[in-house]
Image 1 (cartoon, rainbow, N blue to C red):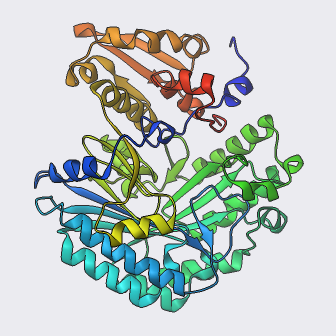
Image 2 (image 1 turned 60 degrees about the vertical axis):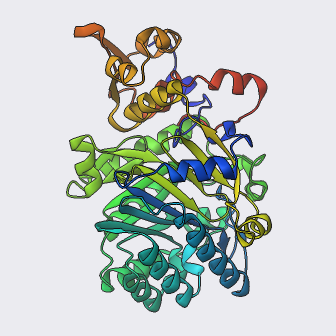
Image 3 (image 1 turned 30 degrees about the vertical axis):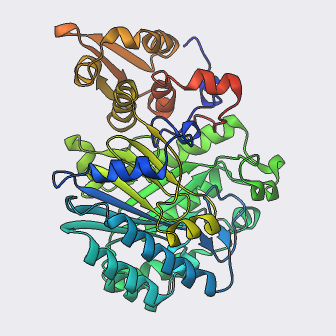
Length: 458
């Protein structure tokens, strides 16, 4: 190998939950643009809905989400009321849309919304949209706030998948990241959810946290396995204090080195695979009978702003502060502050902050990147043809892959009909973001100008 694997792990590249990535959105995409895009959606277009609730009871030091702390219920009630108005406003532009196949509540901690607000909002979604009989309806949860009553309410409103933010079970690591939640609390939350019939559970874990070691992360994985979630996400902690100021509360001297991060990821991954979980892309794992493992096997796995997903909705519509939607024509992001977002909606205006209209080249590269991130391979010629482009448009990308090819991380196969198949090898899979980055036409400029700063590849 020409390059040390550590040198690859240290490279800063996007996570590619979208392409182009959010730093390239601009204010040239307006509310009028969004209205046109929504109006172009037809009955042939299935929908996915994302609802963002930007509130938590307290901010965890590691958090990279768009959220704020509140101890009061009044802001939550007001926010829920405005969210309902936004649902009504956007649904007026979507009268010809197809069925909703996926709903995801994120945050923040969306379960902080008052019980009646959750009931009213889900009733409104049923009234305004055609919900598919096989709808997946998911919510992100803080295990510390899951009660028996909450679990029953979630089941009542139609939630059928829950994601628990676990991160790490070690008490010292929990203190270092400002999120103390002993194993017993997570186990109790799991029990409440399953008792209410919510058996589809995801656990989110993290490596690269302050104070983590081989022993702590293996203990965290073992405790996670004892609770048998259907899916496990193993995210690398992204320390970006220039973007998230509360991350300055983390002692940087306690963070694992790049080599230690790589070792922690490898150890946790090996333990999960040994337990029979199927590796899903960059950082997800699922039991073999889970729908995500099935989607990987049949080629229908997708990637969006929630990470890897089975969501087959063709148009992603975002609601709430800072939420991002993806239409056939481009990306839309809502205003990032509650005040302006609310004033816009009360004025009957779509609360658009910025976005990006997709070119044919964007669509082509986005498709290639998603294929690499989900299936570790892509046949380039058919993708180019689909968007009216050719392999000549990818010459720079193929040149950029040369180091990865030399080091056995990527392979190129030249086949019939002038096709080129790009494959990420078993060795290269932990570094798949680097292979995807080769096809990112915006990356070199953004790195040179400092327009966007990204986390380490592993």
